Image 1 (tube, rainbow, N blue to C red):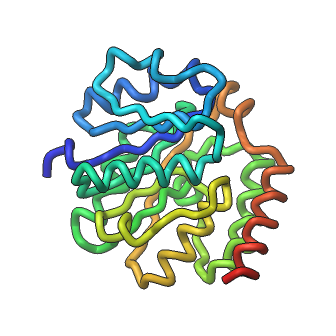
Image 2 (image 1 turned 30 degrees about the horizontal axis):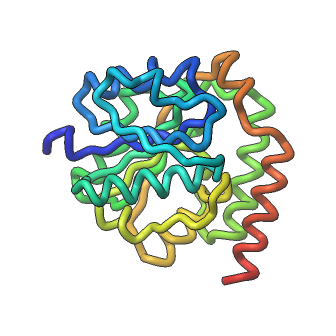
Length: 226
């Protein structure tokens, strides 16, 4: 299968410092890269305009979930066979993509989630680790699926799964919404070990405790309205 059939969706909001260094290795590998600029204060396209990358811009900031949905709709329309979610901030490693896709290519999974807790080499900060361990059980109450790392931005989908998973949670609660839809549609899923690089830049851009509270209430509202 050609790497051009593998679409990498990268939501980006004010990531101009690291966007090029994130995108360029993916293009060099032959992937079809789609950057969704989610209403950045400085248009992201100008930092990667000379690269073979598709850039889609939201006029206003809608949230990561909305950016992923926009990128997925585009990729499906362009004939993507496989779709990978990949963060713009330089945390994710290029080598993780083929690890994510392996179970799908082997036809043992429709959806694959990356997990920071299945590797002994994780550089996850202690406070972040504690929060995520707690979140996995809270997440289980809402989704019915107990993953080791429910809020990792690295995910892969075959075309069938990507077509069935329509993200309506615009912001960070989309991670749990994806699990709800995986279960609802009886999709096969698994986790693979991935490492995440935590730099001073990525830590500064990371989610705050307040965002975790917002995710909880977004999930509660989602469950009440189902």
